[in-house]
Structures are given as C-alpha cells and as structure tokens.
Length: 157
Image 1 (cartoon, rainbow, N blue to C red):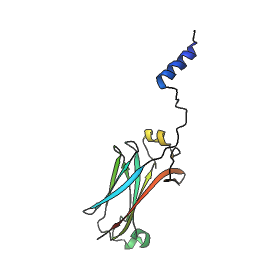
Image 2: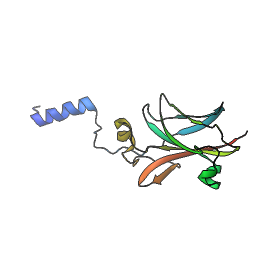
Image 3: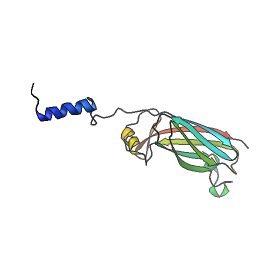
Image 4: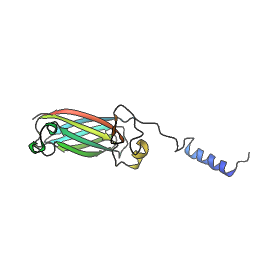
C-alpha cells in the first residue's frame, strides 16, 4: 500500500496525539468547593477544599451582618466587608481577615470562581468567562459564568 505524504502526516499526528483533536469542544465541567472557617485571636481563617487545579484563583468576600444594617461611619471596624484572592494549592485554599473590633453577629463568606485573572491552564479548561462550567452553584456575574459557594456562621464575643 502506497501512502501519499499528507496521509502519512495525518497518520503520524493521529498516532502522536490520539484520535481526539484540540478542536473538539470540551464537555461542561462541575467544580466542587467546600468552605470552613476558624476564628483565632482576632483573625478569621477561611479554609476550603476544591477539585480545581493548583494555581486556580478563588475570590472571597467576607461580610459581617452589621455592614448591611449600619451606616459605614457607625461601624466599629473598617473591614466589616473584606475581599481577597486565594490560590489553590494541592486541592486546598485559604485566606484570612482581621476580626479585631468586630461585634457579635452573623458573618457570610462568599467564594467565587473563575473571576479573572486566571492562569492559562484554568482558562483553557473552564473558559475565559466560565463558559465551560456547569452545576447547581453556577450563576451569571456580569456576563461571566461563575461558581458561587457561601458559608455563614456566628461571631460571638
């Protein structure tokens, strides 16, 4: 059997990369994120686990209930609403917020993924705007599909 040059190149490419091509769309993917917290000497530690790859970045927002009910100039602390980013490392992530001068009350932690910027591997896997995400916790955040998970607890003084 005599193969033409383009056929040989196609056969080599198929053997090297398998029968799947990069042009095939990736199936939507669900993401697992769990959140826990620890209060320790005036610091709130936000801790969690996820099946996201190492290097993925999560955005967190911590909101004390007083931030919803009292004018800012009456807050006992300037950080009753605090935001930050946590980088996934081996299936875990963490962040911390000072709770000095916080009164007793309910606190809600909101974790969001994949708000930009994200590493190239994460963009390739989940889409630049989260378009490859699926699951019950996926919401639209200003035109970006994002996974949102909340965790609520009480601060006691």
